[in-house]
Image 1: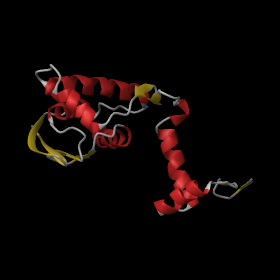
Image 2: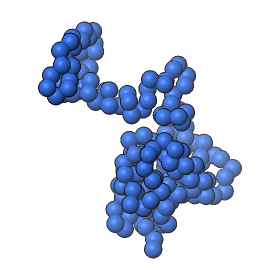
Image 3: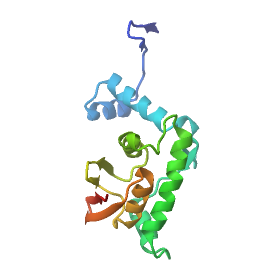
Image 4: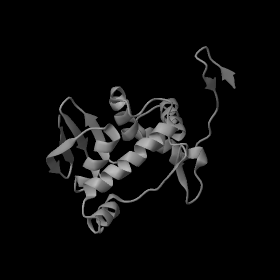
Length: 174
């Protein structure tokens, strides 16, 4: 292997035809494809994954179909899913605080926290605007739990403005 001026190492990679076809279908070069793959591998701390156990940093995570998650929430005995969401948002804020070396609760870091949430959680694409929080493709069919969760995570008081299958819009109060 030889090292270039950019610090990259040139290496030979042997791929099965099936893997090569996957790279081709992605529309990326082999270097782009594996660069993105390695970035996600590090971001999701996949080196800690083993059969039946998945971790992101020190938090154990699981993969669950959106339909299953919504079924569990809709059939739970919780009267106020917003409060339950807020409680879990506070726990995630604490987990993020220990996982990162920046002050996650500081309102100046809301945009950074939103980006981190989008990359790691998979509950939809959250966009923070001046007067609204918009969640595109939300995993939750009903917005209550997510609204409470985001209120705690972002330290905002929210009000539901719109709730559709593909988008929830929350107004920022105050």
